[in-house]
Length: 291
Image (cartoon, rainbow, N blue to C red):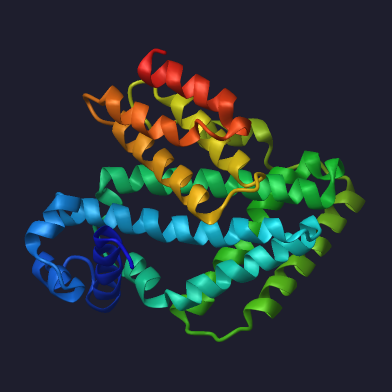
């Protein structure tokens, strides 16, 4: 049985996909979900807060499916190929909702949404960088930034062909094709031995400039460390979701003008029984609660 918050999120996703964000009313959302307006306002203060929750929910579920592949004991290349396939399947299954993002004006002006999307782009870039180095080894290091840019250019262009031009492609075939082209590109880079076009130093301001105000860089970095380490741990699905939700709450609370320590203390309890995260737990506790 889904909780009420999830029911509201999924009802809103269906309506936003069909009608758009701005033309869907809160009344329509509660009617679709079978709840009352009172129930809506218990979970969300506005549609802006709801749309951010939807994106967190969507990307959270996508990331769960992507990271689950890493537990299948495949080679790094096989893992990444299957992860690409999962991404394409998710995009196709949520085509209408993703199309809404392209079509709606004003979503990017939502400050919290802009912060969230920028953080996701950074996380994806760092993930791609890590996985490509695991596939191609340290020889790729001088060209790893260029390789990620080329990979993301390939995937985003095919995403657009599927979404905007309604091209039908096999997810499995497309994932294999993109990795084969990446093989060709990286082989050529290694053979030519030319200087990289983009370097780590050039990307650093983009990857490490914090979107969090008031000196929250360290908290954001620790959250990313925990997210990355979670992908390497053998956790139950429910524990993984609890940790993911706790990180989201910590990030959101810390951005408030008057964050509450009791919220941080509650969320940090989620990490207490995961020995592998004890270092990050202690560092976050020191920053967030002074303990």
